[in-house]
Image 1 (cartoon, one colour):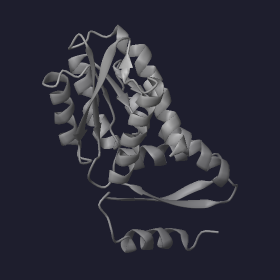
Image 2 (image 1 turned 60 degrees about the horizontal axis):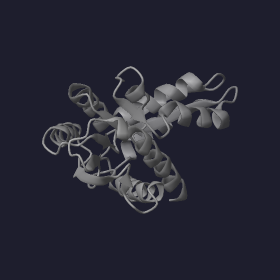
Image 3 (image 1 turned 90 degrees about the horizontal axis):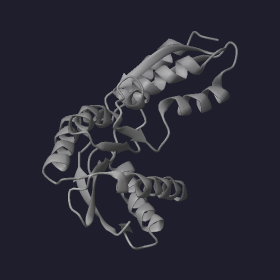
Length: 223
């Protein structure tokens, strides 16, 4: 939680700098849409995000929840971890709720669906904590910023530990942008080890027997 709080304090400080320069929907308010996974497979991460974000805003504003005399209004929306829901909610936040800026989401898949919406409305989307490289890589547009880590940073750390000559690796990952971007970055970071099998499973998977067996079979004859 300490790391989460620090990250969101930094994010809140960033908001304090960026927001006064925006055209505000209401003269005495700065409206922030927080779109995240209140429910769904990533609910635990979503809860951490929500708590950290509010703590960060409180810290950055000295408990006043105001910036340059403007009251911060946080509008929470539950994307349920579903890309189509997240996309619709962001459009509603910008269009109907008159949000000046948006923060989130939890899922990389949801984030990728939301990127074009920020561009369409010409409003900032501050991505946190979605990780996939493509969010600020090939799918990026000028309205997208991120405060957290990305897949490549994870991959470099993993490669430091696992990049050993002659080592064969099997990977198990989620079958969406977070998992696939993570494995791609990991492969690119390895110089000595070799990935011999990639196993991708849906995020809702509860029985990993078949996937694990395929990993075991792929590795059993390797040194």
